[in-house]
Image (tube, rainbow, N blue to C red):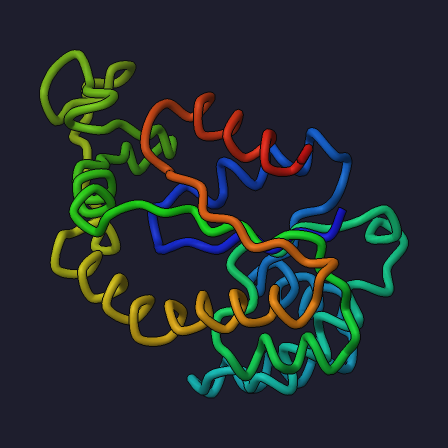
Length: 216
């Protein structure tokens, strides 16, 4: 099974991607994973990416696509793979098509912006352990205190409402046009299916919706 999982920040791609990969015994591949792995093993592509990132520049689409090709050549991808949040832009999608990478299904996790803001801005973290809470969905026993240590909980900068809305704006401008591109791609490639899955409800109910689509 060759799967692309799309959705805005906080839509639940990481959690649902883990479920899918466990269900089908396939690796989850993200841009970050590919970059970290290439850098850690010291490959030629990794060395190039490391220099670019250390200079504060963005890694080019060409280099990302070269990393993708290299990653898909590894043995654990022979039985399939899941792209988590890749491709992010139309040029990356076009590059993937030019690499002749077949895709069975593209799944968009659909969650309204206000719901994502509520999910992410409500997160609180115990910095010492990494334990996470949510002021609505998983509150600590004592407000703003870690259950085990009693130490203060922190709202990370990435989870502040202003930051979340900026990330959603970037997603809307860069990645949402990709949704229309994949809908058109579905028309051009009968072997590929594009589906929207509502990402609201319990983690288990969302997982079951996705699995039903995968089994059709």
